Image (cartoon, rainbow, N blue to C red; front, side, top):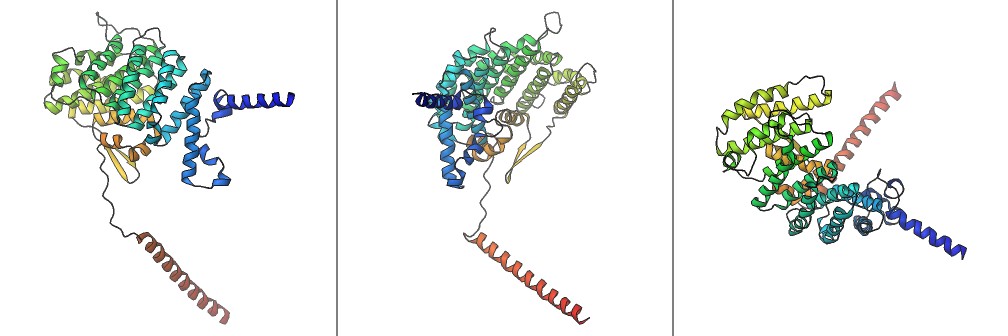
Length: 427
């Protein structure tokens, strides 16, 4: 009986270790789930790609099952492990077959989970939407999660950090799902209702905002900026000046005086996006305002106040130099992103904003997704390079030719050395 009880206890601990133990014991955050899967039975299976893929999917299925366990920390670990795996490898087919189960767990965590669990859940939601691209599943995820995320970002009793993450996730999911433009504008108005608390007061003074609320306002502006890139030129001026659909340029420029760096940077980016789309419909778009705001931008681009951190001053000056150059001279600094044998050119503020959003989700693995993800390639208009006209056996012929050349060189060196060796012996 004691022996049997000991085995039951061991089995229980093993199960808890899969889902309920700490990161160091079970999920090994210092190594990815993908690299771990390649080590399983490596001595038996070798490097068979199909076997490694099966082992990876088996491990991921275990973590998907773990999203419904009782332990809160266990659920968080499973969310984080799935997020890391889906960031590092494109697996749309695997996710498509299980997205409803994953989405149900995310929905349950957003309703009942603690702050850390909510954050882990929304991060996974954004990643699976990137994986699924423009499929109907992405629209379904947005439809299911949007009401919950809206409730959280508008609830003042929720932690500002959670509301901040929800703003970012909601903006990303809406962008990736490609919703109706009317719904997009309504959501932008929701975001403005949050960051409008950073507008100047009625007497022209800067409101006092805590650092956590500053992060929330910056996230709301960033989400607003991302959704703005979905608008097409044609009626930007009308929406800015003659309706309540979008905030006025004067209101947005008030955010440049915020004591929080992230709010100032996001506000500068918003002005750049508005002027970029506005100038596509009218070359002299809001010239008077551009002249008025230039002086403020110059101050931010040359800010040397010692009460700001050195790193913050450096980042602010670099960003606002680019914004000032665009507002004054209509010049956007070009950035080239190389992945594989292809190159992505970021030559507009719209593209830079969309690329920044994807970088925040995918990190260094964005190159993998730019290569394999059809939606990302469509967003950035990446054209598939024409195939190189080669014969099926050209690689083999090149290797054979190289071997012949090496053999000829080796023979020539051998003959030359033999002659020299004979001369030395005669001497």
